[in-house]
Length: 293
Length: 336
Image 1 (cartoon, rainbow over the protein chains, first blue to last red):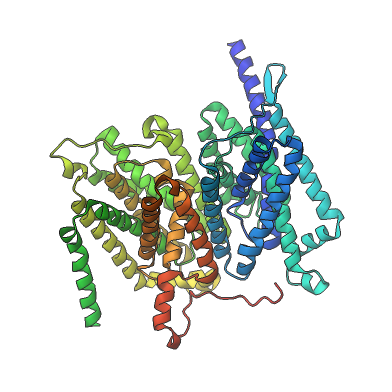
Image 2: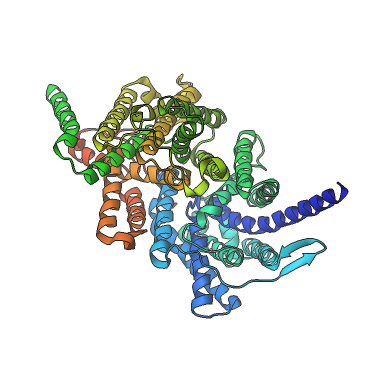
């Protein structure tokens, strides 16, 4: 009995730590989405599909063109950033004054486009980088380097965005426009440019997430559906547009999935996370950190 | 007015006569699919037209299909009982999620994302309980012994299915019309304009929204059950989940959410497009239909937010009539 409990606790600890590592990448995704929502006031339903395109980008650059991983990653981040900018320019900009639901549904259309584009262009096979990073054994627990690396890179990315938003003029303008989008144009800030820059940053974060996720998961055209919904739920749970709330919610969700997956199948982890989300919406409709009005 | 009624009756007779005149099984198959999906899209639009955009309808449809099939396979309950049970299940789930949503005034983005979580839950539960539901590999209702087809609601005959689907589709349109002429519609239009003002004017916002959600969820579950009984094969990806929810939204918007036949036009366009692409390009066409849908959806939302049929009707009726409440309004925020 005692030995059983020991093993159990080790597994529990391992799951908890793996949850934290997963939370890092989820927090990165949530940050990108929150940034776009906070500044432009739209939800990109297709956000996870941008990540999927980035993962394909990594796959082709590394496997097909033989670039080393560290050289391919910046290219992919740039590519997805451009894609984010294009998405804003072609789809969101014409709809800026339309009802928010229309903007949301238009990005739903983009989701269809990106998914089927990937199906047509890359086929529906599962592909992976073929890079197998070693596993770190810590006592009786095993952690893959891929997860540790992702966690570290996600944290660095978030710190980078934080510094950009607080230390540069453009960043300050972005934060200002998120607070009051009517006054800022009077202060000499061009909102069109700010929106475009913000979309590109959001895209860049998706690109970074793609570089990290491709280390752990196979890529296929529908891979976005496996973590896209979770990302939206994290953002809503944290309060749409609330960066810190999103950060905390990412770890809460990651722990639920990881621990739920420990006790039974991974799907039940997701079910628990979704159910937790619905319950939380009723307890705190405006997000974890919102003050009740 | 009499002429219009005569027109409807002639159209109805023509529709009923189709399977007796034209017996090509493939064409009938496509027609049945169009009718079933039209009904599903109409169910979505009953809510969607009032700005209650739900991405949870994939979940309701999945419940309709899986509860009916599971009851039949595991407990031998006839779909005649199973379908109402599945509808009630979906209805209860809709109320459980929708009541707090409306009570705590979760609207707009937040409502969309809560319903998204709902369809996510249904999809994951179906996948997770793979011992019973077959998981992502799909699920087949057991064939009824010969002679018991009626009890099991299984017919090999396409004509029978065509008539069933036609009847259900017409029922959907009748419900639409009933709502269109009822006080619910006026209340819901007021709510979609301004909830506070509607409440101040004496509209019971929560109750009205719940009514419309319940009707919509019940109908969607029925469409899922019908689809299951007709196709005799369901998988989580074809009847539940976020992709199906988005597909409903897409078809309804392309056809036009604000007119009764709009969702039907959407279903005709999407299904015919998919079939044409499939026949002319074969397996090479995988993905192309969705690519076209996606492009169309984006273009429609930007240029024709009222959908094809809505815009056509507007064009015919318009110049004299003042704009109705649901037309696109540009919010005059300067320099935005």
